[in-house]
Length: 295
Image (cartoon, rainbow, N blue to C red):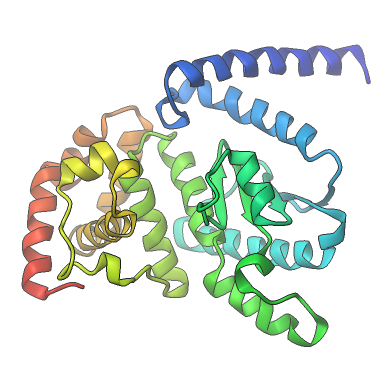
């Protein structure tokens, strides 16, 4: 390795360590300033490259997929789906990646849980974090292996039920707003993308609006990750955003995203985009949902 490359790597490492200190002080990645994010992203990719150093890689212009040597077939199938997702985002939002996205494939749930220090009951199949996408082996949640005679069915299920649209939506929103979004909106938008692209909605008895207590907007805004009924928090966010988009149109949402990228607070950007406060919009959605009996 040349001295120049060594200096560059050491410089990024020093900046990354400084970024991690900032991340600790600010109590979460979502609170890191837009200016600090490139350092965190670069450092995170460097660190994950070391963490996944025993894995193999598949590369395209859009993605670098890190996968265990025993999962080559799954990795190729996942990469094909990732390319399809990226093409859909180019078509829908005129969004093009500036650099390849690192994707990390975990062979089992326990390995993924250890990476993120999750409790045993955490069942996420995908994560977007610091510019990278992390995926659980689809066979863990499909409960069927990838075989030659079921390859087409496996690929169809992964397209319709897999987490790539959801996680790529987080990546897209992070890029176009410079990370300046609250948690409820982040999850609302990702669910809307899933619904628009593959028709998926998270609907369970726990998130029926006619059978469960409704959270207030301050609940979603201030305590999204700490609410007892996670399914309800996600469902309300999705329905609220979908209603707002149906009423005001995509151009208003684009204005919201542009102002967020400029550093406006979410409340201010929302008011500039929709000519009313978030609380007023939420109240109107509640009234509409009660009348229409969304559940």
